[in-house]
Length: 380
Ligand SMILES: [Zn+2]
Image 1 (cartoon, rainbow, N blue to C red):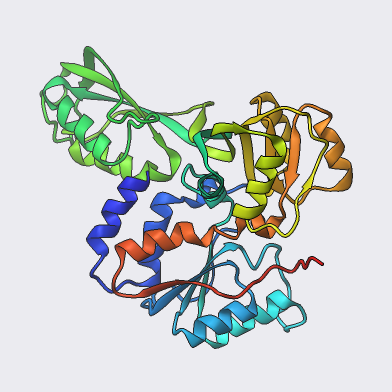
Image 2: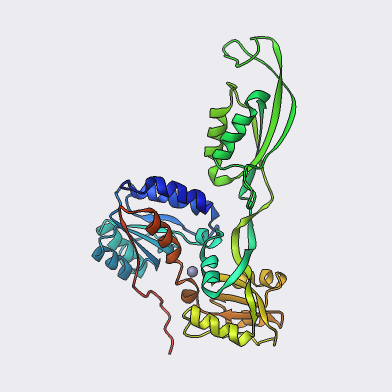
């Protein structure tokens, strides 16, 4: 996924970009349909037709961050948390998010949010935490369902390879580290061309038998239009026969949380110390230690308590997350150690993910990480 995105980024490297063009590249890597149903990812404010003068990356697009963007001549802010989360009926500046929005509009700033869609991709928020604390061999803790579909089409045998190639080039046929995956079987198709038709083979008004291949492949929903357009373009028939099936499979590369392993097991206290240092956590709240070495670690940036059952059934020794409530800590129940490092602390390195993409691939505008600390929580 990421590599494909990088390739497209490279092509656009030297071209002045409009906001909408950058968004469409970002959404190749981090599609909006990977977000959770309650979320509000995407362009929250701004004119997508404007050219980008600079991009400021942050966790929270507060008014202070927007002021920093103006100073730096950045007219686009890419935030992790959407500043608008619930519908609003008035825009009077009564709340901090209304004031932020008013400031954005007055100063012609665009605010774009990559939230749970960035949590849910393989190279997203949890991968960044894993990188910081040295967790390897990662897999998704709760793979997301309903993101994949199967395409079945029928094509004359002599054109089947061209159709397969077109489908693969459009992004179909990827399973884990494999691509160009399909199943193909030969058979005979029939059709009778009507009066106004222009058949590729056969004669009008006569039933025609044609040696065809049935091609099956799968694709993620967000590229469906591209895949179907590629099919229709490459297929020789005037009327292309194809079926689309929803798949009740989970996507192994997309979903909430991650689990992986430390290279060398650590004592629980040594691991907590490492966590505190590398995640710059002023304090860690943790459940009773079990006297076991820590090897397997589950991770969920932000508020991750919903993933505790997954972390336990994955056999994790420690669950690193944020935003735990008092009663929820009891659920560790001697089966795991929960380590709450704080919501902000767990996600503070998230802007680095988008930064490395933009910095490497674009030279026509500046990409910077905000220096404003937006953490609303203080520690004594
Ligand atoms: Zn968060």
